Amino acid sequence: MRKPFFAVPSLSAALALALGLCLSTAAFADYAEVNRLMRAGQLAEATAKADQFLAGKPKDPQMRFLKGVILTEQGKPQDAITQFTKLIEDYPELPEPYNNLAVLHAGQGQFDRARAALEMAIRTNPSYATAHENLGDVYAKLASQAYSKALQLDGTNTGVQPKLSLIRDLFAPGAKGQRPTSSSAAAAKPATAVATAPVAPAAPVAPTASAGPKPAATPAAPAVPAATAEGNSDEVKVAVQAWANAWSRKDMSGYLGAYGKDFAAPGGRKTWEEERRKRIVGKNKISVQISNLDIKVTGNTAQARFKQDYDADSLSVNSRKTLDMVREGNRWVIVRESTG
Image (cartoon, rainbow, N blue to C red; front, side, top):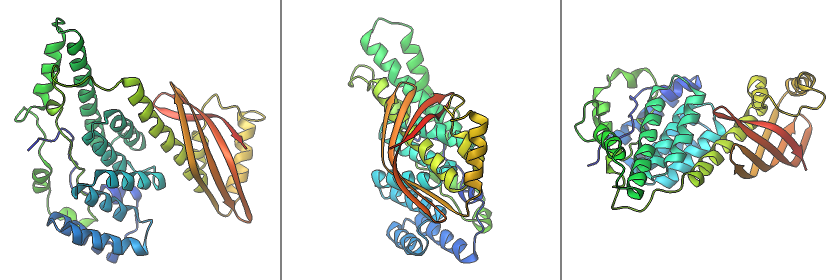
Protein backbone atom coordinates (compact mmCIF):
# COMPACT_ATOMS: atom_id res chain seq x y z
CA MET A 1 0.00 0.00 0.00
CA ARG A 2 1.28 3.46 -0.85
CA LYS A 3 2.20 5.76 1.95
CA PRO A 4 0.37 9.11 2.06
CA PHE A 5 2.34 12.20 1.22
CA PHE A 6 -0.42 14.48 2.51
CA ALA A 7 -0.61 15.35 6.17
CA VAL A 8 -3.51 13.70 7.97
CA PRO A 9 -5.25 16.12 10.38
CA SER A 10 -6.22 14.86 13.81
CA LEU A 11 -9.80 13.77 14.41
CA SER A 12 -11.12 16.94 15.95
CA ALA A 13 -14.03 19.35 15.87
CA ALA A 14 -12.15 21.69 13.56
CA LEU A 15 -15.02 22.28 11.17
CA ALA A 16 -17.63 22.81 13.85
CA LEU A 17 -15.37 25.18 15.74
CA ALA A 18 -14.49 27.11 12.61
CA LEU A 19 -18.18 27.64 11.94
CA GLY A 20 -18.92 28.70 15.50
CA LEU A 21 -21.96 26.43 15.40
CA CYS A 22 -24.52 26.34 18.18
CA LEU A 23 -25.08 22.60 18.02
CA SER A 24 -28.14 20.91 19.43
CA THR A 25 -27.84 17.63 21.29
CA ALA A 26 -29.75 15.91 18.47
CA ALA A 27 -27.40 17.27 15.79
CA PHE A 28 -24.38 16.24 17.84
CA ALA A 29 -25.75 12.71 18.11
CA ASP A 30 -26.31 12.53 14.35
CA TYR A 31 -22.77 13.70 13.56
CA ALA A 32 -21.33 11.22 16.04
CA GLU A 33 -23.41 8.35 14.63
CA VAL A 34 -22.33 9.06 11.04
CA ASN A 35 -18.71 9.12 12.23
CA ARG A 36 -19.16 5.83 14.08
CA LEU A 37 -20.62 4.16 11.00
CA MET A 38 -17.76 5.45 8.84
CA ARG A 39 -15.14 4.20 11.28
CA ALA A 40 -16.83 0.80 11.29
CA GLY A 41 -16.70 0.66 7.50
CA GLN A 42 -20.50 0.77 7.24
CA LEU A 43 -20.47 3.35 4.46
CA ALA A 44 -23.91 2.54 3.06
CA GLU A 45 -25.46 3.01 6.50
CA ALA A 46 -23.46 6.23 7.02
CA THR A 47 -24.71 7.52 3.67
CA ALA A 48 -28.32 6.75 4.55
CA LYS A 49 -27.98 8.49 7.91
CA ALA A 50 -26.33 11.56 6.37
CA ASP A 51 -28.94 11.78 3.59
CA GLN A 52 -31.76 11.50 6.13
CA PHE A 53 -30.28 14.37 8.14
CA LEU A 54 -29.67 16.54 5.06
CA ALA A 55 -33.23 16.02 3.85
CA GLY A 56 -34.33 18.19 6.76
CA LYS A 57 -31.27 20.47 6.89
CA PRO A 58 -29.85 20.63 3.35
CA LYS A 59 -27.50 23.54 4.12
CA ASP A 60 -25.89 22.03 7.24
CA PRO A 61 -22.12 22.41 6.61
CA GLN A 62 -20.92 19.79 9.08
CA MET A 63 -23.03 16.98 7.65
CA ARG A 64 -22.26 18.06 4.09
CA PHE A 65 -18.58 17.85 4.98
CA LEU A 66 -19.08 14.35 6.38
CA LYS A 67 -20.97 13.35 3.22
CA GLY A 68 -17.93 14.44 1.18
CA VAL A 69 -15.68 12.25 3.30
CA ILE A 70 -18.06 9.29 2.88
CA LEU A 71 -17.97 9.71 -0.91
CA THR A 72 -14.17 9.77 -0.77
CA GLU A 73 -14.09 6.58 1.29
CA GLN A 74 -16.48 4.95 -1.20
CA GLY A 75 -13.99 5.57 -4.00
CA LYS A 76 -16.11 8.24 -5.68
CA PRO A 77 -13.61 11.10 -6.01
CA GLN A 78 -15.55 13.07 -8.61
CA ASP A 79 -18.72 13.03 -6.50
CA ALA A 80 -16.64 14.05 -3.47
CA ILE A 81 -15.08 16.91 -5.46
CA THR A 82 -18.57 18.12 -6.38
CA GLN A 83 -19.67 17.87 -2.74
CA PHE A 84 -16.73 19.88 -1.38
CA THR A 85 -16.93 22.43 -4.21
CA LYS A 86 -20.58 23.18 -3.45
CA LEU A 87 -19.78 23.41 0.26
CA ILE A 88 -17.04 25.93 -0.52
CA GLU A 89 -19.44 27.98 -2.64
CA ASP A 90 -21.84 28.26 0.32
CA TYR A 91 -19.19 28.59 3.05
CA PRO A 92 -16.02 30.07 1.45
CA GLU A 93 -14.71 31.06 4.89
CA LEU A 94 -14.12 27.42 5.96
CA PRO A 95 -10.60 26.05 5.34
CA GLU A 96 -11.28 22.31 5.79
CA PRO A 97 -13.28 21.75 2.57
CA TYR A 98 -10.49 23.43 0.57
CA ASN A 99 -7.97 21.04 2.15
CA ASN A 100 -9.99 17.93 1.32
CA LEU A 101 -10.64 19.22 -2.20
CA ALA A 102 -6.89 19.69 -2.64
CA VAL A 103 -6.19 16.11 -1.55
CA LEU A 104 -8.70 14.81 -4.10
CA HIS A 105 -7.15 16.90 -6.88
CA ALA A 106 -3.69 15.66 -5.90
CA GLY A 107 -4.93 12.08 -5.99
CA GLN A 108 -5.87 12.68 -9.64
CA GLY A 109 -2.47 14.19 -10.42
CA GLN A 110 -3.91 17.72 -10.70
CA PHE A 111 -1.30 19.36 -8.52
CA ASP A 112 -1.84 22.92 -9.71
CA ARG A 113 -5.50 22.66 -8.73
CA ALA A 114 -4.43 21.19 -5.40
CA ARG A 115 -2.05 24.11 -4.91
CA ALA A 116 -4.81 26.63 -5.65
CA ALA A 117 -7.20 24.98 -3.17
CA LEU A 118 -4.58 24.83 -0.41
CA GLU A 119 -3.66 28.48 -0.91
CA MET A 120 -7.35 29.31 -0.45
CA ALA A 121 -7.45 27.21 2.73
CA ILE A 122 -4.49 29.15 4.11
CA ARG A 123 -6.02 32.44 3.03
CA THR A 124 -9.16 31.69 5.04
CA ASN A 125 -7.16 30.46 8.04
CA PRO A 126 -3.44 31.42 8.03
CA SER A 127 -2.82 29.23 11.10
CA TYR A 128 -4.14 26.02 9.47
CA ALA A 129 -0.99 23.92 9.89
CA THR A 130 -2.25 20.90 7.91
CA ALA A 131 -2.85 23.03 4.82
CA HIS A 132 0.63 24.57 5.11
CA GLU A 133 2.21 21.13 5.30
CA ASN A 134 0.12 19.80 2.41
CA LEU A 135 1.04 22.83 0.32
CA GLY A 136 4.72 22.09 0.92
CA ASP A 137 4.13 18.52 -0.26
CA VAL A 138 2.37 19.74 -3.41
CA TYR A 139 5.29 22.03 -4.20
CA ALA A 140 7.62 19.08 -3.70
CA LYS A 141 5.56 17.00 -6.13
CA LEU A 142 5.59 19.79 -8.71
CA ALA A 143 9.34 20.09 -8.23
CA SER A 144 9.70 16.34 -8.75
CA GLN A 145 7.80 16.58 -12.03
CA ALA A 146 9.90 19.54 -13.17
CA TYR A 147 13.19 17.82 -12.29
CA SER A 148 12.05 14.65 -14.06
CA LYS A 149 11.21 16.68 -17.16
CA ALA A 150 14.57 18.47 -17.03
CA LEU A 151 16.40 15.15 -16.75
CA GLN A 152 14.38 13.72 -19.61
CA LEU A 153 15.32 16.65 -21.84
CA ASP A 154 18.97 16.73 -20.80
CA GLY A 155 20.29 13.49 -19.33
CA THR A 156 23.79 14.97 -19.05
CA ASN A 157 22.75 17.58 -16.48
CA THR A 158 24.49 16.31 -13.36
CA GLY A 159 22.85 18.87 -11.09
CA VAL A 160 19.30 17.57 -11.51
CA GLN A 161 19.58 13.96 -10.31
CA PRO A 162 20.69 14.84 -6.72
CA LYS A 163 17.69 17.18 -6.35
CA LEU A 164 15.30 14.55 -7.68
CA SER A 165 16.80 11.93 -5.38
CA LEU A 166 16.46 14.26 -2.41
CA ILE A 167 12.72 14.64 -2.97
CA ARG A 168 12.25 10.90 -3.48
CA ASP A 169 14.19 10.13 -0.33
CA LEU A 170 12.05 12.62 1.58
CA PHE A 171 8.86 10.69 0.81
CA ALA A 172 10.29 7.19 0.67
CA PRO A 173 8.56 4.65 2.96
CA GLY A 174 10.30 4.54 6.32
CA ALA A 175 12.03 7.88 5.80
CA LYS A 176 12.67 9.98 8.88
CA GLY A 177 9.67 12.16 9.61
CA GLN A 178 7.34 10.06 7.45
CA ARG A 179 3.79 10.88 8.49
CA PRO A 180 1.46 8.13 9.69
CA THR A 181 -1.45 6.69 7.79
CA SER A 182 -4.96 7.81 8.64
CA SER A 183 -5.56 4.71 10.75
CA SER A 184 -2.52 5.29 12.94
CA ALA A 185 -3.40 8.96 13.27
CA ALA A 186 -6.85 7.98 14.50
CA ALA A 187 -5.41 5.57 17.02
CA ALA A 188 -3.17 8.29 18.42
CA LYS A 189 -6.01 10.72 19.05
CA PRO A 190 -7.54 10.69 22.55
CA ALA A 191 -11.03 9.20 22.60
CA THR A 192 -12.38 12.21 24.49
CA ALA A 193 -12.48 14.19 21.22
CA VAL A 194 -15.75 12.53 20.23
CA ALA A 195 -17.33 13.28 23.58
CA THR A 196 -16.65 17.01 23.44
CA ALA A 197 -17.82 18.05 19.96
CA PRO A 198 -18.84 16.72 16.55
CA VAL A 199 -15.93 15.13 14.78
CA ALA A 200 -14.58 16.34 11.43
CA PRO A 201 -12.95 13.25 9.89
CA ALA A 202 -9.36 13.13 8.79
CA ALA A 203 -8.70 14.24 5.23
CA PRO A 204 -8.17 11.53 2.62
CA VAL A 205 -4.68 10.72 1.50
CA ALA A 206 -2.88 10.92 -1.82
CA PRO A 207 0.03 9.00 -3.36
CA THR A 208 3.63 9.73 -2.47
CA ALA A 209 5.88 11.87 -4.59
CA SER A 210 8.19 8.88 -5.03
CA ALA A 211 5.32 6.91 -6.55
CA GLY A 212 5.01 9.51 -9.32
CA PRO A 213 6.54 9.51 -12.82
CA LYS A 214 10.02 8.11 -13.34
CA PRO A 215 12.29 10.40 -15.37
CA ALA A 216 12.94 8.14 -18.37
CA ALA A 217 9.85 5.93 -18.51
CA THR A 218 6.89 8.29 -18.50
CA PRO A 219 5.46 10.98 -20.78
CA ALA A 220 6.43 14.59 -20.23
CA ALA A 221 4.73 16.43 -17.40
CA PRO A 222 1.75 18.59 -18.40
CA ALA A 223 2.58 22.08 -19.57
CA VAL A 224 2.65 24.36 -16.54
CA PRO A 225 0.92 27.40 -18.11
CA ALA A 226 -2.26 25.42 -18.93
CA ALA A 227 -2.43 23.82 -15.48
CA THR A 228 -1.77 27.14 -13.83
CA ALA A 229 -4.57 28.81 -15.80
CA GLU A 230 -6.88 25.99 -14.71
CA GLY A 231 -5.94 26.52 -11.08
CA ASN A 232 -6.32 30.29 -11.40
CA SER A 233 -9.81 29.81 -12.84
CA ASP A 234 -10.76 27.92 -9.65
CA GLU A 235 -9.32 30.73 -7.53
CA VAL A 236 -11.29 33.36 -9.47
CA LYS A 237 -14.48 31.32 -9.07
CA VAL A 238 -14.00 31.13 -5.31
CA ALA A 239 -13.21 34.88 -5.12
CA VAL A 240 -16.39 35.76 -7.05
CA GLN A 241 -18.53 33.51 -4.85
CA ALA A 242 -16.95 34.96 -1.69
CA TRP A 243 -17.77 38.47 -2.94
CA ALA A 244 -21.42 37.52 -3.53
CA ASN A 245 -21.68 35.78 -0.15
CA ALA A 246 -20.18 38.78 1.69
CA TRP A 247 -22.70 41.03 -0.07
CA SER A 248 -25.56 38.72 0.95
CA ARG A 249 -24.38 38.70 4.59
CA LYS A 250 -23.94 42.49 4.56
CA ASP A 251 -20.34 41.84 5.58
CA MET A 252 -18.88 45.19 4.53
CA SER A 253 -15.31 44.23 5.38
CA GLY A 254 -15.47 41.16 3.15
CA TYR A 255 -17.44 42.94 0.44
CA LEU A 256 -15.25 46.04 0.15
CA GLY A 257 -12.14 43.92 0.58
CA ALA A 258 -13.04 42.08 -2.64
CA TYR A 259 -12.22 45.26 -4.59
CA GLY A 260 -8.61 46.03 -5.44
CA LYS A 261 -6.73 49.23 -4.81
CA ASP A 262 -7.03 50.08 -8.54
CA PHE A 263 -10.81 49.61 -8.67
CA ALA A 264 -12.39 52.27 -10.87
CA ALA A 265 -14.82 53.58 -8.23
CA PRO A 266 -17.39 56.10 -9.55
CA GLY A 267 -16.87 59.44 -7.81
CA GLY A 268 -13.73 58.25 -6.03
CA ARG A 269 -13.08 55.31 -3.71
CA LYS A 270 -14.12 56.97 -0.44
CA THR A 271 -17.40 58.33 -1.82
CA TRP A 272 -18.20 55.03 -3.49
CA GLU A 273 -17.56 53.04 -0.30
CA GLU A 274 -19.77 55.35 1.77
CA GLU A 275 -22.58 55.03 -0.76
CA ARG A 276 -22.27 51.23 -0.94
CA ARG A 277 -22.25 50.98 2.85
CA LYS A 278 -25.50 52.97 3.09
CA ARG A 279 -27.20 50.90 0.42
CA ILE A 280 -26.15 47.55 1.82
CA VAL A 281 -26.31 48.01 5.59
CA GLY A 282 -29.65 49.81 5.30
CA LYS A 283 -31.38 46.74 3.83
CA ASN A 284 -33.22 44.29 6.08
CA LYS A 285 -32.23 41.29 3.98
CA ILE A 286 -30.10 40.77 0.88
CA SER A 287 -29.67 37.73 -1.36
CA VAL A 288 -27.15 37.70 -4.21
CA GLN A 289 -27.09 34.51 -6.29
CA ILE A 290 -24.81 33.96 -9.27
CA SER A 291 -25.19 31.40 -12.07
CA ASN A 292 -23.86 30.62 -15.56
CA LEU A 293 -20.43 31.73 -14.42
CA ASP A 294 -17.91 31.99 -17.27
CA ILE A 295 -14.28 32.77 -16.43
CA LYS A 296 -11.41 33.67 -18.75
CA VAL A 297 -7.91 33.95 -17.28
CA THR A 298 -4.98 35.61 -19.04
CA GLY A 299 -1.85 35.68 -16.93
CA ASN A 300 -2.59 37.80 -13.85
CA THR A 301 -5.86 39.17 -15.21
CA ALA A 302 -9.28 37.55 -15.43
CA GLN A 303 -12.81 38.31 -16.50
CA ALA A 304 -15.83 36.71 -14.83
CA ARG A 305 -19.22 36.94 -16.57
CA PHE A 306 -22.38 35.60 -14.94
CA LYS A 307 -26.08 36.01 -14.30
CA GLN A 308 -26.82 37.84 -11.05
CA ASP A 309 -30.09 37.42 -9.15
CA TYR A 310 -30.40 40.22 -6.59
CA ASP A 311 -33.17 40.34 -3.98
CA ALA A 312 -33.34 42.96 -1.25
CA ASP A 313 -36.48 43.78 0.70
CA SER A 314 -39.08 44.51 -2.02
CA LEU A 315 -36.57 44.85 -4.88
CA SER A 316 -35.76 41.95 -7.19
CA VAL A 317 -33.39 42.38 -10.15
CA ASN A 318 -31.97 39.82 -12.60
CA SER A 319 -29.07 41.02 -14.71
CA ARG A 320 -25.84 40.07 -16.44
CA LYS A 321 -22.70 41.12 -14.57
CA THR A 322 -19.05 41.28 -15.64
CA LEU A 323 -16.17 41.55 -13.18
CA ASP A 324 -12.66 42.37 -14.41
CA MET A 325 -10.17 41.04 -11.88
CA VAL A 326 -6.42 41.04 -11.27
CA ARG A 327 -4.15 39.10 -8.98
CA GLU A 328 -2.83 41.18 -6.08
CA GLY A 329 -0.28 39.14 -4.18
CA ASN A 330 -1.96 35.79 -3.55
CA ARG A 331 -5.57 36.87 -4.09
CA TRP A 332 -7.88 37.91 -6.94
CA VAL A 333 -9.60 41.30 -6.61
CA ILE A 334 -12.10 43.30 -8.65
CA VAL A 335 -10.81 46.32 -10.59
CA ARG A 336 -13.88 46.97 -12.74
CA GLU A 337 -17.51 45.88 -12.76
CA SER A 338 -20.26 46.42 -15.30
CA THR A 339 -23.85 45.38 -15.73
CA GLY A 340 -25.55 44.34 -18.96
